[in-house]
Image 1: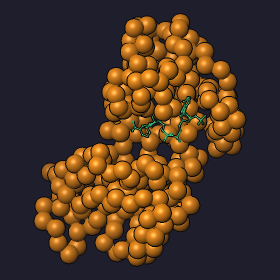
Image 2 (image 1 turned 120 degrees about the horizontal axis):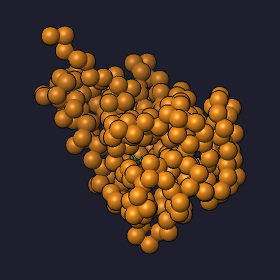
Image 3 (image 1 turned 135 degrees about the vertical axis):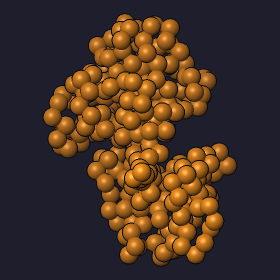
Image 4 (image 1 turned 180 degrees about the vertical axis):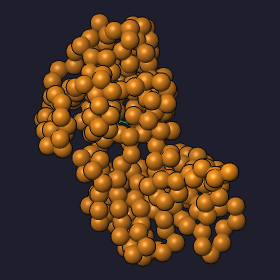
Amino acid sequence: MAAMIGGRTKLIGILADPIDHVRTPAVLNPLLEARGADAVVVPLHVDAAGLKALWPGLRALRSLAGLIVTVPHKTAVVGLVDRLGEAGQLAGAVNVIRREPDGTMVGDTFDGRGFVEGLRAHGHEPAGRRVLLLGAGGAAAAIALALVRAGIAGLRIVNRSQDRAERLAARLQAAGAGMEVEAGPAEARAFDLVVNATSLGLRASDPLPCDLAGIGADAIVADAVMQPPETAFLAEARRLGAIAHPGLPMLEGQRELLLGFLGFADRPSSA
Ligand SMILES: NC(=O)c1ccc[n+]([C@@H]2O[C@H](COP(=O)([O-])OP(=O)(O)OC[C@H]3O[C@@H](n4cnc5c(N)ncnc54)[C@H](OP(=O)(O)O)[C@@H]3O)[C@@H](O)[C@H]2O)c1
């Protein structure tokens, strides 16, 4: 956060509804302050109907550097932005928007690259792994693209709605995946990276997103679900001797990417 808010201070809004739980200002403001950025992250509590009314005002707001976007606005803003990055297009979802000086709004999602960064930060290199991806929604699509770009060996997508998995596989092939990408059944034993990017695990009563029987000891089982931090899926992975990787690193892995996209990259001092 800007040490002192002044006339040049840039605003980064976080669009959410509900908003009480949002921790983004508490996480990003200290990072901005530490790097001497004249910018502040503030909550913007707005519902779906309100966002449409607010949008022309956001576009006109010259103090606005950009917006962080979360539930329930991630897909709605796809139709509002002027330009969309590759991951945002493929996922049909946006989690950050940069306002250019002329009012052009540029959206993208860093859920996927954040996931890959989070894996690497914990010593898990995805390159060369055969990946079983559970889910075909916004987060799953972004993760799929980032994993393909990170050089995995192959990808199978499993989803409750099979047609959605097939469409995602086709979009990834059309984006030049350059490897085997298929929609199919969940046979965890044949994979060495299994990723839960469904909403299953958020509630204690949820079933496991797939059966992990036969999973190898060197396999990584990752969960996008952050709450609870240790899902039943991760507990089952540990019980079977596999490596469990929780949802928080996916969020942590995005911080620098989001700030860089908004124009506040950390610049190493030239001492
Ligand atoms: N860690 C992070 O930083 C981070 C960031 C973003 C999202 N996430 C998490 O990622 C998960 C997905 O988010 P999203 O934005 O991609 O949501 P989304 O677009 O709504 O997609 C939800 C996915 O979950 C599946 N699903 C939902 N209920 C199900 C059920 N009862 N049984 C089987 N499958 C079910 C859906 O299948 P259908 O296609 O059949 O409906 C779809 O594949 C959420 O848990 C979210 O909290 C984490």
